[in-house]
Amino acid sequence: MTLPASSRLQFASDLEICRILKGMWQVSGAHGRIDQGRAVDEMFLYHDAGFTSWDLADHYGPAEDLIGEFRRRFAMRYGEERLGEIQAFTKWVPYPGPMTRSIVEQAVGVSLSRMGIECLYLLQFHWWDYSDPRYLDALKHLADLREAGKIRHLALTNFDTDHLRTIIEHGIRVVSNQVQHSLVDRRPMARMAAFCHQHGIWLLAYGAVLGGLLSEKYLEQPEPPRTELITASLQKYKRMIDAWGGWGLFQELLRVLKRVADKHQVGIANVGARHILDQPAVAGVIVGARLGIAEHIADNARTFDLALDSADHAAIEAVLLKSRDLLQVIGDCGAEYR
Ligand SMILES: NC(=O)c1ccc[n+]([C@@H]2O[C@H](COP(=O)([O-])OP(=O)(O)OC[C@H]3O[C@@H](n4cnc5c(N)ncnc54)[C@H](OP(=O)(O)O)[C@@H]3O)[C@@H](O)[C@H]2O)c1
Image (cartoon, rainbow, N blue to C red; front, side, top):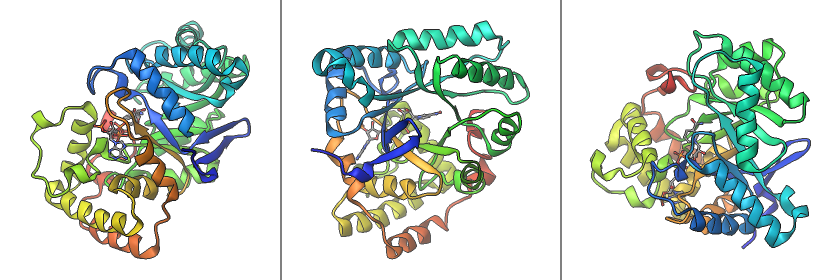
């Protein structure tokens, strides 16, 4: 299987990505036990199918080490000259505290060494507490490390529009902001997307398939109790659905998505992911993979064959109009973490 050319996007002048990135929070241990050998075997299946881009973080269990191992085995199997085919985007999520050059440099050094690379492809920075302005110190040091060749591109995750603006006003250049973005969570469309579009910043969207809730598996099913939501991801997005409008309205959405999916001969998850890929400023959607446990390579490839038409959008919009506005309920992007 090979993905179509439309699966690729020029993310930066020197960096092309697959528009469905594979998310590695799912290897952290909070989504089932991962066998690391099998996980790396399966990374080859994704890569060989065309899913060459990975999203990870310093705190996703062994994710950075798995990238290191994958790169080592990849170089042995295909030759070092092909390592450039892989894109692995990590995050730095520091505990609040002083952000000196040496603290920042040490954190970057740990990720470099775990991933077995000389320069991070993309470093996405998260900050827990806006009342502590030291995020600007951290970002300035990260920008210096970019100049020093330790980071190719600097990016953010879970920043809201106001603080993204503050960062830009401080002259710090970032290529993307990774935020929750789905048919249920449309907060990025309120302010963030327009700001990003204006400033040439991409959005990377997570949660587009709601941890798997946005699929046939949950269609016409009773509301699952918490004990049946066996991954941290399912629990996270069930809370979002509750805040958005509840299980009854979600079933209404699934029914409409099923009709759209059947019309195009794809799955419900494809419709959800395609809808987000088509939104302004969105470079890619990050779909989690429980590597070695459950595999959705062919399922997710179908997203690239799908083109939603105006009738599909109208049918989906009619349900979404009945939901609560999460911007009002939660706040702008990332507010759920603060
Ligand atoms: N920056 C942040 O704060 C943040 C927060 C959350 C996530 N993320 C990133 O986003 C990634 C995705 O995580 P997520 O929590 O948002 O999960 P998600 O991508 O919404 O859900 C992943 C789950 O969806 C199911 N799935 C995937 N493709 C499917 C398909 N075509 N049909 C049916 N089911 C399908 C799989 O469930 P089964 O395995 O059960 O089959 C998979 O484990 C993470 O790994 C991480 O990289 C970032």
